[in-house]
Image (cartoon, rainbow, N blue to C red):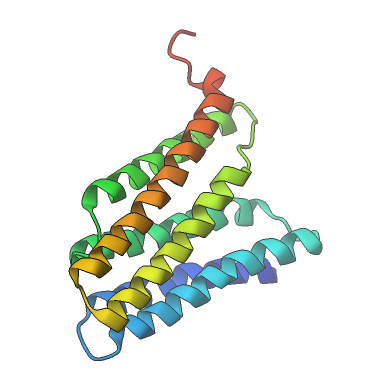
Length: 182
């Protein structure tokens, strides 16, 4: 297994530790969860950069990298809902987009077409990861106040905007593979 794939696997392995720390309640648990989330998020940037630079792109990496991103981000968002840090409706929209694009990728793969991550998908992932980090910092530093919740909501709903735009672009681009009129 090459280094980029090891980094991706490490991101997946970190998820249960991140979730446990986020949901447990002891002094400093959010800060510890934040460190793990940030480390896992950084591996996303490094694994792709290393894979492309050193021609180490593999089918395993193409499969697991986007899945690892989705697992990490959705784990955080579900925990945020559980902790009362954000609106469940926003998280449901984000999850619906993730399932839709994953389904689209499966359908196009049957046709031999790879749905590569576009710029809007990358922006969506980057912004959402940064929003998650900001929310954890706010919650750790200021606890769950009405001002913190309002900022959390703004960040999550901006993520939703990126999510809907990127999902719409994927659907428009690959609609011919799922067009119900064909």
